[in-house]
Image (tube, rainbow, N blue to C red; front, side, top):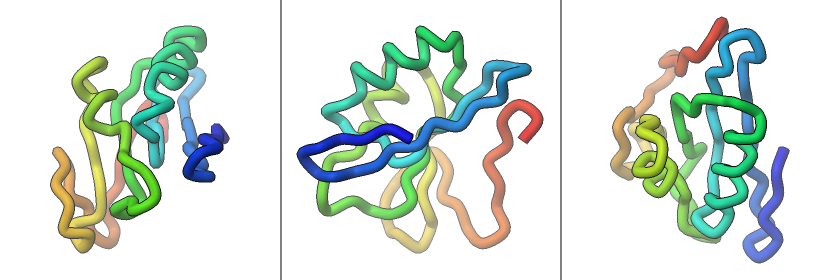
Length: 98
Protein backbone atom coordinates (compact mmCIF):
# COMPACT_ATOMS: atom_id res chain seq x y z
CA UNK A 1 0.00 0.00 0.00
CA UNK A 2 1.41 3.38 -1.07
CA UNK A 3 0.10 6.86 -0.25
CA UNK A 4 -0.02 10.21 -2.07
CA UNK A 5 -0.65 12.97 0.48
CA UNK A 6 -1.94 15.84 -1.71
CA UNK A 7 -4.99 13.91 -2.91
CA UNK A 8 -5.07 11.44 0.01
CA UNK A 9 -4.95 8.60 -2.52
CA UNK A 10 -3.90 5.04 -1.82
CA UNK A 11 -2.13 3.10 -4.55
CA UNK A 12 -1.67 -0.65 -4.31
CA UNK A 13 1.14 -2.73 -5.79
CA UNK A 14 0.47 -6.46 -6.14
CA UNK A 15 3.18 -8.84 -7.30
CA UNK A 16 3.90 -12.51 -7.80
CA UNK A 17 7.24 -13.07 -6.08
CA UNK A 18 7.88 -16.17 -8.19
CA UNK A 19 7.57 -14.55 -11.62
CA UNK A 20 8.09 -10.87 -10.79
CA UNK A 21 4.85 -9.94 -12.60
CA UNK A 22 3.03 -6.99 -11.01
CA UNK A 23 -0.16 -4.93 -11.11
CA UNK A 24 -0.52 -1.40 -9.78
CA UNK A 25 -3.96 -0.16 -8.76
CA UNK A 26 -4.96 3.52 -8.77
CA UNK A 27 -1.56 5.06 -9.62
CA UNK A 28 -1.21 8.84 -9.28
CA UNK A 29 0.60 10.88 -11.94
CA UNK A 30 2.73 12.80 -9.41
CA UNK A 31 4.03 9.59 -7.84
CA UNK A 32 4.97 7.76 -11.05
CA UNK A 33 8.71 8.36 -10.40
CA UNK A 34 8.33 6.73 -6.97
CA UNK A 35 6.41 3.82 -8.48
CA UNK A 36 8.98 3.30 -11.26
CA UNK A 37 11.77 3.36 -8.69
CA UNK A 38 9.97 0.82 -6.47
CA UNK A 39 9.29 -1.53 -9.40
CA UNK A 40 12.95 -1.33 -10.39
CA UNK A 41 14.20 -1.87 -6.81
CA UNK A 42 11.97 -4.93 -6.40
CA UNK A 43 12.83 -6.31 -9.85
CA UNK A 44 9.18 -6.39 -10.93
CA UNK A 45 7.63 -6.31 -14.40
CA UNK A 46 4.48 -4.21 -14.46
CA UNK A 47 1.81 -5.98 -16.53
CA UNK A 48 -1.19 -3.75 -15.72
CA UNK A 49 -1.94 -0.27 -14.38
CA UNK A 50 -5.55 -0.49 -13.26
CA UNK A 51 -7.95 2.14 -12.02
CA UNK A 52 -10.90 1.25 -9.82
CA UNK A 53 -12.89 4.24 -11.13
CA UNK A 54 -12.51 7.63 -12.85
CA UNK A 55 -10.65 9.84 -10.42
CA UNK A 56 -11.86 13.36 -9.73
CA UNK A 57 -9.33 13.85 -6.94
CA UNK A 58 -6.16 13.26 -9.00
CA UNK A 59 -4.80 12.53 -12.46
CA UNK A 60 -4.11 8.85 -12.98
CA UNK A 61 -0.55 7.70 -13.55
CA UNK A 62 -1.63 4.83 -15.82
CA UNK A 63 -0.70 6.59 -19.06
CA UNK A 64 2.75 7.57 -17.82
CA UNK A 65 3.42 4.03 -16.57
CA UNK A 66 2.19 2.62 -19.87
CA UNK A 67 4.53 4.90 -21.82
CA UNK A 68 7.50 4.14 -19.55
CA UNK A 69 7.07 0.39 -19.23
CA UNK A 70 4.71 -0.85 -21.93
CA UNK A 71 2.15 -2.20 -19.46
CA UNK A 72 -1.54 -2.26 -20.31
CA UNK A 73 -4.03 0.11 -18.69
CA UNK A 74 -7.38 -1.10 -17.36
CA UNK A 75 -10.61 0.36 -16.00
CA UNK A 76 -14.27 -0.58 -15.72
CA UNK A 77 -16.22 -0.44 -18.97
CA UNK A 78 -19.04 1.21 -16.99
CA UNK A 79 -16.78 4.17 -16.13
CA UNK A 80 -16.91 5.53 -19.67
CA UNK A 81 -13.14 6.13 -19.53
CA UNK A 82 -10.70 4.82 -22.10
CA UNK A 83 -8.00 2.22 -21.42
CA UNK A 84 -6.38 -0.72 -23.17
CA UNK A 85 -8.74 -3.01 -21.28
CA UNK A 86 -12.27 -2.03 -20.37
CA UNK A 87 -13.39 -4.57 -17.81
CA UNK A 88 -16.82 -5.91 -16.97
CA UNK A 89 -18.22 -8.10 -14.24
CA UNK A 90 -16.35 -11.38 -14.03
CA UNK A 91 -13.33 -10.22 -16.06
CA UNK A 92 -9.94 -10.97 -14.58
CA UNK A 93 -6.47 -9.47 -14.82
CA UNK A 94 -4.05 -12.39 -14.77
CA UNK A 95 -0.43 -11.89 -13.74
CA UNK A 96 2.07 -14.49 -12.64
CA UNK A 97 0.24 -17.26 -10.83
CA UNK A 98 -2.71 -14.99 -9.98
